[in-house]
Length: 211
Image (cartoon, rainbow, N blue to C red; front, side, top):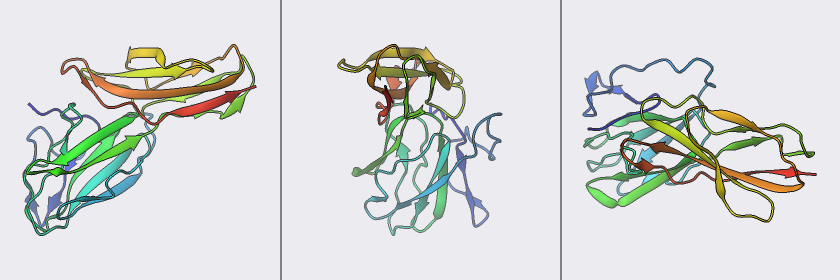
């Protein structure tokens, strides 16, 4: 069974509903307190996606625009079963939109043409960029709290060290950090489905410099 998170909608084109997961109906309002989403269009060409590897913000929406002359799909291949357009006929236009709420790297593919693939990267945010020891830094890894069987994992890489768990299996979208020593700290995050046992890839890292 396919499962969806975020604001995932199938768009009506020429007054006909294109094939898609039955779990999705009309667009829904965003979670209270979530930031307004940006929008990005990915063209589904023959036989590639353009852009194929965009970086977007947490809470941004990607719309797959089917403009090629061949039937294609836009299907999440992260293992999280986030979306699947099913087969979309040639020239159907904007047919599938999905909102990426959490930091991570999310692969997608055209299922009839497995060499036709791409990915969306969603970075974690660490702010301010610089500060003193024992100052308060804010880490934001999602635009909304996790729901259902989704959770967030966050890793830290302190100065002169390796990646290790900082927050594991949390549903909150942000937290604060107070460093005890100077140097560069890096953070990265991912979304995980505890039921499926799958997760996105780790997000691009964000860093802070502590004086």
